[in-house]
Length: 145
Image (tube, rainbow, N blue to C red; front, side):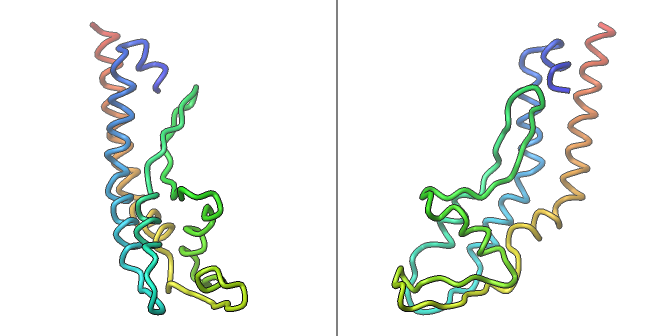
């Protein structure tokens, strides 16, 4: 679709990407809200949930088959898997503030990311279909004109 759009108008692929991002944005915002709302265990607050929320974003893949993905990215490489652990219904074991002699099992009570994306999927599919239909109409109109 994006390749065909480029042939009609150079700005149409950019508009398509923007419209697709708009379709996914409510799911991204809800995932951020859900991770921030997870219950805190213990007394120390490290800002972890806030950092995870900040890393939830829409990632555009470029190339011959452009696509959008919703990802959860952490700034520090050694924390890359933490959002996935936090999304687990079974929880994970970790040292308390890095103390390798004091480990705890932490659970969140459910999925903040995957469940959110699944819940939003029907609306995202409808919105994406509308974006694609609009783009197809633009191409058809250009080919008639």
